[in-house]
Image 1: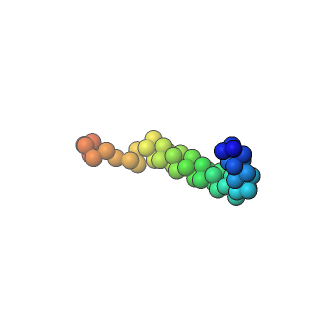
Image 2 (image 1 turned 60 degrees about the vertical axis):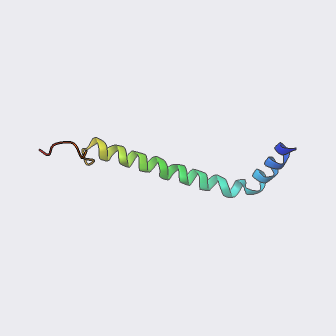
Image 3 (image 1 turned 180 degrees about the horizontal axis):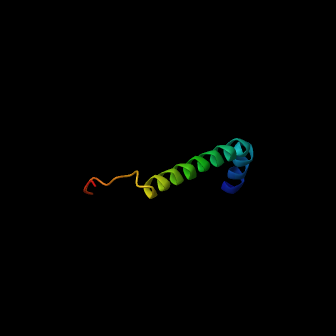
Length: 52
């Protein structure tokens, strides 16, 4: 019974939830890539590192 209720709810809200999840996933991937490239290029400076 729980599976049929979950299937019905997903069938009703799926068209609205799926684009939101895809958008949020895209934003998360973009943010992770942005942080990675900042770290790789040395923009993120550790507090303990001596300044050169």
